[in-house]
Length: 91
Image (cartoon, rainbow, N blue to C red; front, side):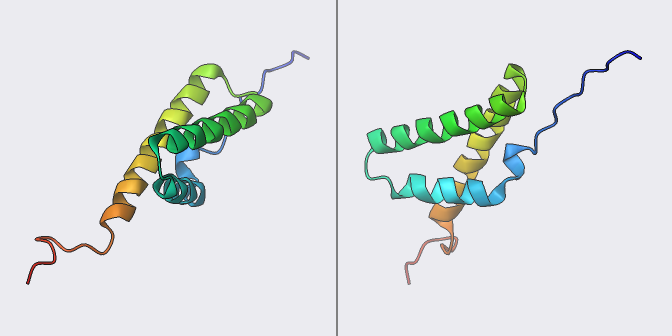
């Protein structure tokens, strides 16, 4: 019987909404660009390490990370504008 290679299909990072919200909140709390960069690097390294342990192909890791960070950026924007009404608060 021939062995068939199994495809690794990781849970999409972009669907990890709790993680996305948590990272966005922590990014917004950073007081300098340097701190934000350092945190982003730490998160990226941890996500890459996890996917590598699972055997996810490099091109898929890159795709997943790109989608994840796009979702984090969208969440940062959402958090910044949450509660604001169109036209500002001028009376």
